[in-house]
Image (cartoon, rainbow over all chains, first blue to last red; front, side):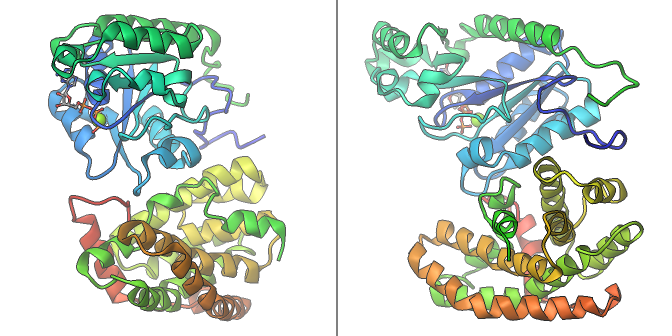
Length: 229
Length: 221
Ligand SMILES: Nc1nc2c(ncn2[C@@H]2O[C@H](COP(=O)(O)OP(=O)(O)OP(=O)(O)O)[C@@H](O)[C@H]2O)c(=O)[nH]1
Ligand SMILES: [Mg+2]
């Protein structure tokens, strides 16, 4: 099926393209801080691209560009028309366009990170957009949040609980959060970070590196001359 | 009328349309649209101008092929004065073409993609309508419908309007949608793309240009 030239659209099975990692979670939990930390840690050894989804403006993309963690051209901003979760779950067309645009311009890439706009506990990425996803919570909403569950908390491939430095200030008990998260996540990993203090970011980067190697192993790019799958 | 047309016109078709307001966001920001009555006037104006132009292009695209794709796309450009609107129309066209090629694979769609990588949205809409077995009039109706429903939904979100009131307004526009489709289909039956409807809407052009210069906005257009 499909054309064989001037056709950069990737096969839905993921062969010949980068791993797509979604980073979701409530407003202000530290998604952009995580993207920045991953770019800093993984940038030297991997070919990266980043897509941000902002509610207003291009705040997150601008922040990342200013932070100088990645070539600004490799950061692409998507606007979501009042509905951040629609753009990552129900109608992913603009995000796919942005991801494929990056791969077309800079490919082959090893990893494309898609940061969702800040949303609620039910917002998760479509499998059509993200191969793996991280859900970022912070402790400032209180230690009850993991217990409340929701698809982000229960199904994300990695749950991150950020801003542990604030735990004493808001009276959040990290052992409670850890226990409650484990109870609803069926063995999937949970990590605690304080990205402000650069604590824990390395474990996340290690987890991501493992995914990227796995992905490369199973989705090796096809030989450059034959593009029909 | 067929079931494919319903799927194609449905706002749930995952082709990126939800992030566009067709000038509504800026019309709200300027105060021109602030309630259901002013929204009604805005939508009628939109339908009579941009809507009719889109309907004509979509109808013509149903029978286009070969060199006709680039020609029709150039006709769309000639009818779109605002660069911001061109950009929005091409982005939406590219996204629709990408998803349509997965949903309704057809040689004509591959041909269009090869001829024009980011065609204007109405051109793609007509091409996809043809691939699903729709007539030029069906394609025109889908384009006319699209010209008012996206902006109406954006107004509901931006102003917190009663969604039932707004849908009542859309129902009231149904005869005008039919008329628009009929006019567009007969214009395209003349067979000459230069003769397709070419109504300008300077207010919409200005809204689009102001919108793209606004720093804080929710919608792409
Ligand atoms: N104290 C503390 N602050 C943090 C930490 N991580 C991030 N922040 C701060 O929290 C604020 C929000 O962080 P972002 O990374 O922008 O959060 P986000 O999830 O991307 O936010 P949105 O995209 O707006 O939803 C910023 O002021 C960060 O500096 C942390 O570990 N501890
Ligand atoms: Mg952010």
